[in-house]
Image 1: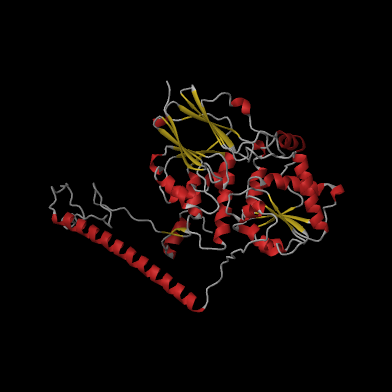
Image 2: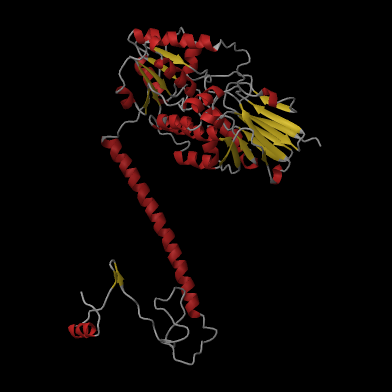
Amino acid sequence: MTSIIKLTTLSGVQEESALCYLLQVDEFRFLLDCGWDEHFSMDIIDSLRKHVHQIDAVLLSHPDPLHLGALPYAVGKLGLNCAIYATIPVYKMGQMFMYDLYQSRHNTEDFTLFTLDDVDAAFDKIQQLKFSQIVNLKGKGHGLSITPLPAGHMIGGTIWKIVKDGEEEIVYAVDFNHKREIHLNGCSLEMLSRPSLLITDSFNATYVQPRRKQRDEQLLTNVLETLRGDGNVLIAVDTAGRVLELAQLLDQIWRTKDAGLGVYSLALLNNVSYNVVEFSKSQVEWMSDKLMRCFEDKRNNPFQFRHLSLCHGLSDLARVPSPKVVLASQPDLECGFSRDLFIQWCQDPKNSIILTYRTTPGTLARFLIDNPSDKIPEIELRKRVKLEGKELEEYLEKEKLKKEAAKKLEQSKEADIDSSDESDVEEDIDQPSAHKTKHDLMMKGEGSRKGSFFKQAKKSYPMFPAPEERIKWDEYGEIIKYVSKTSFSFLCIRGIKCV
């Protein structure tokens, strides 16, 4: 039976922007990626807001912000509440991307679009899958199945295959790479033969990529010339995606004695560098066959770096001796440590800046790529400073008023609850009891006890009026009553040994 398929582009069409598409298969609606650009454009959010309550499932293809950056906002602010599917590395590395992005913005400005709690809430909804794991949907999605396949671009990167009733096949393949790389295998195009509908991008359609050997030689030559000229090298990279390949490559080069790079320093600088490397160590099974064999045969983890120093701030980097090569986030130079180092190092001709991403138009990195010979434009400097004097007093006064208002609101809520409880108690007391319980023996306090909404402090005995003796305890155990000398002597006479 032929299905009705409709694709609505919310972002990522006819321009270089974040990816976000709405796919409707009969009555079931998929959100294919939920990306956000470097400038956090609200146009994407406005488009998403119109459809957010119609979405039945979200499929995430890659862990970077261009593919899932708007997910915390959609869950926390727009009320997106549905199943979200992603591979295990996309789940883990996606969190690292969003943590680093938030902290990079928060370090220099009042960033309020989303919080770390929003990030956690969004990722708690993700159902983690493995490659080639078939998931059969239920409810409105009965008859639909989804399967993640390797895309070969980032660790955990996914090509999604959607099948309807075992016949119609829809393939969502963006940012896929069929070539084998240092840390990843290429995508498996053989598993995607003749789909009914192929959804893909044309970002690199006209780009002629040089061979990997040529690219590596060019990178190494640039790094060597700068370091031997007593300069520093800034490589602007992402947080937990393509940076893994560069870190692996440079650490291998540093191990080679013939390269002569052992006297120079190599560092990875972002807010979550330690976590990124630790997650990489635990996800070797998602890497290339070559790294897998190395790990299985030699029991040598390829991400157990020998020369790469992990830094979480500029103070950590200051302790790394110069000249040095620094892999710093973010790749667009709009925020993060890469922007800070660019501002510090760009005026010295000894230093080099290497850009690894063709970011979206309007970013500083894209301007430098498109205009390599032009002068650097004016850059807005943003940083957080401590409030002093009148500004500090005004801020403290505002915070005080906020706390007082919150306290009054809480007290008013408690007063409303107490008044409602008291009214309930009065109603219970005013109502006469339906019948009195009769006993053969007079119960203690039977005639005087009244019904109450609250639990009685004294325990009632339903059968016999003989109360049980309460045993007293303290931190050393049961309290023993004092025994007189006369009783003690009597016990000894009866044959009990006294110590």
